[in-house]
Every structure is written in C-alpha cells, then in structure tokens.
Length: 372
Image (cartoon, rainbow, N blue to C red; front, top):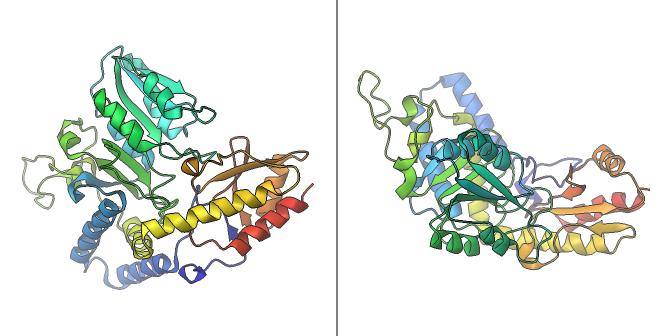
C-alpha cells in the first residue's frame, strides 16, 4: 500500500490536519506545470473537462443526486460563509451546533449575532445521547443545525442519518462540515438528508489546500442570496460581451471567479485513487488502523485514550494523553523524530489513513512509550 505514496523518513499520522499527496497527485501537478510552462493555456478546453470530471468524482464520493449540486470553492470556511450569508434570517432565529466545533463552524454562525440570531452550543462528546441533545436544543425558532461529521480534536463521530431524519421532521436545515470524514469514511448526503455539505480537500481527500467541495441540495440552490460575483458564476460564462447576465441555475452560481485549476488537478488525481481503492475499502482499512492504535495505546503505561472506544463513534482520529509528562514536550519530541501529528484540544492527536502500516504505528508508539 505504500506504493501509493513516496513518504520518506516520516511517519505521517496527521491526515486530520494536512494530508500528504499520493504519487499520482504529485505526478499530475508536475505534468500540469510542465504543460503550462511549455504550452500555456493551449489545452484550456481539456482543463475544463477535468473540472467537470472532478465534480463527478466529488458527487460520487458523497452520493449527491447530481453534479449540478456540486460547486468548487476555496475552503470549508468559504462554503459555510456562502450559507450563513445566503440565508435570510429574522431576529430571534437560532442555530444549533456542537460546542466542540472547530472555529470555522462556530464563528461564522456567531457572526450573525448582529442580525439577532442566536448560536446554541451543545456539548456532545461526553454525552450518552449526543444526537438527542442536539435535537432537544431545538425550538420553534431553530432554523439550522450545523455540525461536523467527526469532531476535529477527539474524532467523535455523530450519527448523521438520525440527525437528518429528526431535523427534517422539524423542517430545520441541516449543514454538515464533512472535512474530517469525507475521503476517510463512507458518506451519503442523500441518506443524511443534508441540505449543505462542505469540506476542503487537503485532509482525508489527500488533495492540495485551496480546493473545496460545496454541496447544496438542488431545491435550495436558487434560494441562497448571492454575495459575491464574477464571470465563472454566469449561466453563459464564456459570453463575455453580453451586458445582460444571469447566474447559473446549478451550484456553479456560487463560484464567482476563475477556478483553481492547479488545485483541481491535484484533487482530481487524489480522488481517483480513493475511488479506485473504493471508499468502503478505505473505511475498513482506516478503522482497522484506528482500532489497532487504540488497543496499542491502552496497553502502554501512563497513557490514556481520550477518543471514544465505541465502534460507531470511532473515526480516523485518535486523541490521547500521557500522564506525568508535559504534552507539548511529547508533541515536540514526536515531531523532532519525524512523527507528523498534532496537539489538539487537551491531547496528542494521531490520524492515520487507510494506507498507514501497523509497523509505522508501532514505531510512533515506541517513541511515546519511551518519553518521560
């Protein structure tokens, strides 16, 4: 499985932050750079076709009903902002989110306070009934639930189908930040009854930074107010001379300017690998690594796993502490010894992917065990 990658002298356990590029992705980006240097934009039509294929691959990855529901934006934060400032709000409206959310999926909603919109933070990671807690936080003024499919620090996974079914019964909009699961776990926007899905491609999707998935359910595409404008959003985007224009009726209407062609080249190649392996197979291997990592950590002295051990709550993220030592010092020790990981929340975060070997995990844990 390491043939997919060319990682040298590092143990990469940081896919929840920035994932490494597969060999085919590096090759595709380098080939594009050579083509551009030698021929300029001669093959622009082919670039547009690859962009179309990228939408198809993203739609397949999340089981969207159509590529028309897919837009290519620059980040998760941009996608969330498109939603927050595209919806019409009234004073007294409220939004429900988990209290443990990454800042991008908290501050955008809190920024609506000036419009009289309340953001309700509901703790979930220590709850025995997190989905019900989120449901119970609703009232007649709740307009939207926005939650991460997987919490960034602890790896805690929510039951998105249960949430979608309950929120739909209450006619509340459902937004999913899928950045910590798409590319790692199977994802079904239709089964979850999601209205919006956002996810940057540089984590588990193994693509470059700056190229993100934005999904908007078809019935809602034309209801979001547009706040940014440019040629790429036009229905007839190559009709530059017309003084009359209209926004495209697909999710492309949210793409205001020139596309990130280079980022799209990389993400296109990375998704090709994930879909070739099969996302069900990716999930199985990834969760096997998670279980192995948890078991090995629990066997170490002074180590406590903070992430959930219940299989349905597990993801690709494992958070832990080692008592009796400074966590920042442990993190620096791991980084200095080429174990690429993160210090998140109140613990060290390891996030292996499907291709990570158990021997690499063992090497990292030897360093954890030997540090005092």
